[in-house]
Amino acid sequence: MVKAALVTLAVVASAAQAFDSKIINGTEAPIGKFLYTTGLRTMVIGDNECMGALIAPKYVLTTATCVHTSLTYSSVGSHYLSGDKDGERIKIVKQTRHPLFDHHEFDFAIFELETASKIAPVKVNFDPVVTPGSWATVRGWGTSTGEEYTTSPVLLEADVKVWDNVECAKAVDASVPIMDSHICAGGADKDWCTGDSGAPLIVNKAGEDYVVGLASLGSSCAIKDVPGIYARTSSARDFIEPYLSTKPVPTTPVPTTPKPSC
Image 1 (cartoon, rainbow, N blue to C red):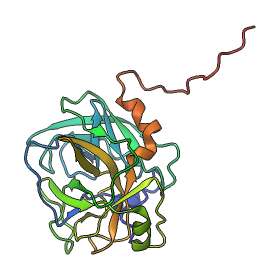
Image 2 (tube, rainbow, N blue to C red):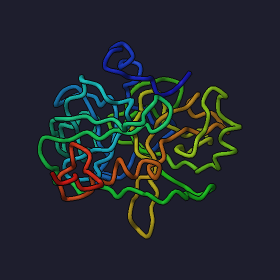
Image 3 (tube, rainbow, N blue to C red):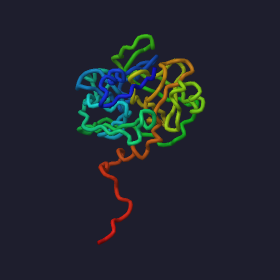
């Protein structure tokens, strides 16, 4: 089973398969921390159906597989699945896929919010080197075990070990080729599962959190010696970085050479 269903505007039925956040064998995250963790949903109050990370006051980084007209609200900074006890609920006004997304590589999208969030954004890692054997953390709302797929009312987290991509390619389903634009982590009975697309993979550097990947692909859930597959943020720097600037994001390409004079 491929974990991230391929959600498109034309295939509404696949949305139900892609949604439903699940972190397998996780523990409850501390309340009041990691507030940049964002739920994406179809209504103001209700379950999250995809995830992302607030990277700028008006922009959430998520996966292209989460782009769908039904996702109209974000829940930013809430510890709770319902998002009605804390945090912010902000309308989504625009969804932009990475131009090179092909349902396997460059699984990135930016969701623009109607108003700026007051929550502090998380930093984005653009260093292509994330040391194999180091630890990262993935968070979401979901099951405490992989036996029954139900949602958790509170934010869960799981520490996962980063894999070397060559070793990852040997461990995962052969139908899922591992590219430089991927980062693999997990394989010790802790994982994200079907529908957790967009869940940020976080590393801590000198006391600051950085997004290094987004939950993207996989052939199993929390299986020993089989990691989850994430979209590597460093591979999408040109797409992501403009949204981190205080300047407006250009809507048309900027000319690189002056026009000839008449």
